[in-house]
Length: 252
Ligand code: UGA
Ligand code: MN
Image (cartoon, rainbow, N blue to C red; front, side, top):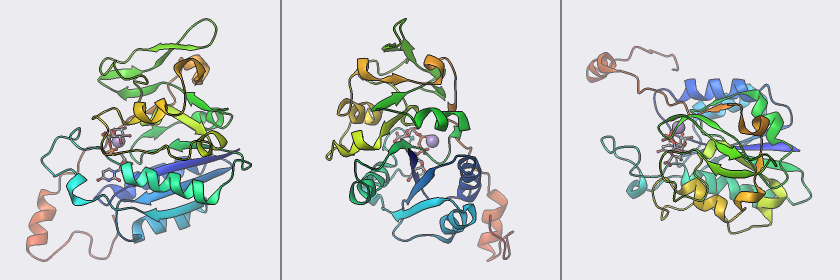
């Protein structure tokens, strides 16, 4: 089966750095198709360069978040969901371009997380919906499904939002392509309560007892919800006000 990784991305000073790291991880994964969706009206040179240089199979799309749904610089990050329309564009592309006979698995891979290549080799064999621990998220060192002695998920260790049927981060599950295609209406939405995006999505696709626990029965961490610090550009701003840039003709 092919792994289809759906990655929303947006322009910012660290974008090329993030995507370089991500593409260099993905280059180690065989049978891989990267669906990257820019939060923009048109494809950027940054993303195009990364994709072309990676020599991977890829699909390059755009889906702009409308200004009303975009977080303002001073707003805390939990006030507006991110990646909603971008992930939906990725899902739509699969629905338009793949059939249930195509063997594949779909994974939502944000551009700033850290991924071990082990997780891809495990998720590849997902029958319907697989699940595993995510490090450094939800106010904990790890958020993980609890697996009972018969290998079924019986609960979660999450510290908040325990009213969520699936209290797990976007990086902690994968769906087989035929299973996704058999649910043609399932997508993300701006109307969902904050932090419930993953759970509301999964509710439409599976039941807790049907989850397929990976990463050695959810005892290993192969994905980390890392977040990149905003770079300090105070001197760059100064140069900019003088019509200058430290880059000259370089790309950062
Ligand atoms: C957490 C979860 O890990 C995300 O999967 C979830 O989408 C997000 O919360 C949420 O609440 O919506 P967090 O690290 O806070 O993630 O979010 P980001 O990594 O900043 O954004 C998630 C994805 O959306 C990234 O791939 C990012 O590049 C993209 N994004 C972010 C956009 O496409 N446009 C934006 O304006 C911001
Ligand atoms: Mn993130």
